[in-house]
Image (cartoon, rainbow, N blue to C red):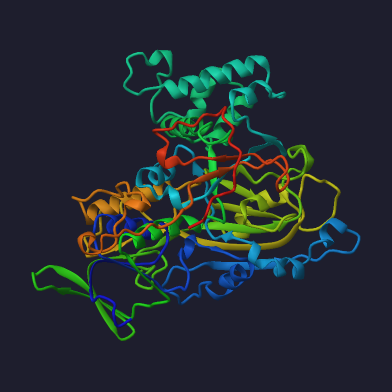
Length: 556
């Protein structure tokens, strides 16, 4: 690349979520940005892979004891073979599934988005929503005494719930109304809650006379908490849950079509639109901090035979410049399953289609953490029709298989020892531990530049903490610049000197944010919601209007 500039305002190594957000934010306000990745693909630990690439990536990139880089570790993959007596399993086998490899989009770090969360708000405010496509989560499940149940997502769902009594329904409606209306500095707190922030949320619910049945729905399903969850934590979580319901569907969550690897690429696209340069498959062989002509510290880097200087350098968690001894990281215990039936069988799936996206959070007894399950069907464009892709995640304790074994034994089976259709049989499994984040939430404060490090993914369901850390790091680097101001519409972007060329470049019909909520079949009975959320404030969502998709979206 002889025509590559030799000086940049910012060089970013790694195309993970936080790195891509910072690169886009800097490019958007006019900084010259060089965005590099040692891989030939985008995303790093935030990538999505087809099946063959996923299997190969786990093996090729797993950590050795001598590694100083952040890598995947303790990988264990297995295919399960069954006899000819099980036709529903034998319809699918290893060879047939691998032949369909390109239909898979498997995430290393799967996440959901709250409809009212920071990511959706950022996509709207920055106008990056044009590059994204989402599907509303179809069902939120909970488990009690080994039995799965659907968590009610609306007032109508609550009042049609058969295992919740009339008295419980009234108590629940009163409690969630108080949660939404609560204000910490309100003089009339006695009308909602007068409770200390560090008090336990479960104690508040008991004080409000909620039954164990209601406490289970609220604490473990809506808040995804535990008995140690504080009042403030529980209140924040349930308010996010409640205010997200109805914004784009009957559940509070969205999942990106084609996998979570699409999200970092959205920000990379914006960075490129505003002049950012991308260079994949490049390794940094030498980095030095030197004095510039105006006595400022800059970073000089060597890429092969090329030398480049940058005023600032940002490194991702998977960068070879991040020494895990200097920046120790936490890990997430992960499992990926391929099954032929949805979790819960006919007990929670009326037509055994499993829906498009199903969420289940299950607390771990004796632990402050729980296991999060995200199940995907072919409606998400992440797996072949007739199969289900299951993601399990929990903060690392003793190892992926050990941390997840109780959950797996409760809801899955790795043989065909019984006819219980609520437990899907696993055809393929992969256990591994993926780096999560740099330990210590104050790591940003300790960085003085010109080299900065991104923290990682965090063991959270959504992107909120990652976005918060990205904002903190960006504001430390560029305290006087806006963070991702709204981008102009494609037809408003002028490339080159307008006076000389008198022409603009229309970037084409870029994809609006699409939230789909398919119920059954490929086309029959299919319900979708198309919302151009970049204009949401001007055109509020009308839940009563006809929202059938015209399928005329062109993906950028």
